[in-house]
Length: 312
Ligand SMILES: [Zn+2]
Image (cartoon, rainbow, N blue to C red; front, side, top):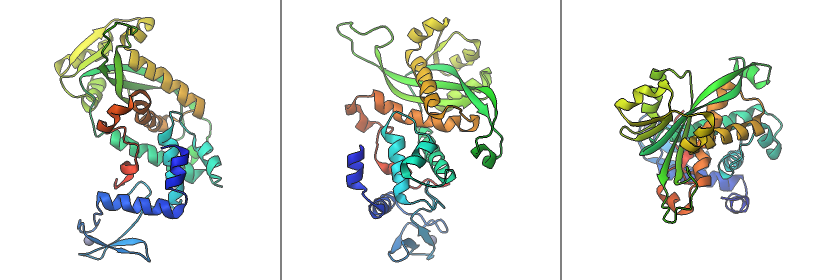
């Protein structure tokens, strides 16, 4: 959805509210007290009332907007920002665009949206042909204290390890015109922050991310040795320059992600790197995949279905 379409569909607070209500009703309202699914809509209070126990559910409760005082329109605009472009937006920029006085609520909204995207990220596994590689991101170790982190205090610089997996499809290349490494088309990406490159850590992360029996390409590092038990593992010993040919998508993703994130955020708090990466996972397939595959692809649905009913 582009800005003009967006404005046509959601010109004001009321239209956003109505659209959100319709989405929740389509997904089904579940009473948090008795799990009943039938409700009356109380128009004056703008709440649903459970037909069994009379427990009330507000429009925002149980969703990503739970307890938020920000308007529906703010949330919609933020979602448009996050989903419509391959650029990442800083909370500062969104705050400026919205003309909102305080930084903290906007910052919290952006992070909540990114973490909701992460929930969806966990719903599917990568399969068939997967490239696996690790990237090292420059981050800053901020204070664990939430409020101090917001003040953007100084922190010590560190490197955070990210495991990048990409699923790709073969592209038909009858005339053999494609460059080596480009005979495949990227489908999905997952980027996960990991604690170390120990074999056990990698294996357990791969088990969470990739379907058993898939073909996995990695570099020649010993860290990947355990993969052969459950996967078809193709390790290749490679120098840095070979990497871009042997693991073209993973390699591209790592360098693009670094560039995009540093462009926007300058200093990345290590606690939030995962959220930023999740956002990239979300929009990258959109960017690379041709439109006709999109309707079969759960990641590509750019409608607002994903912010229905995620419990906290
Ligand atoms: Zn109830």
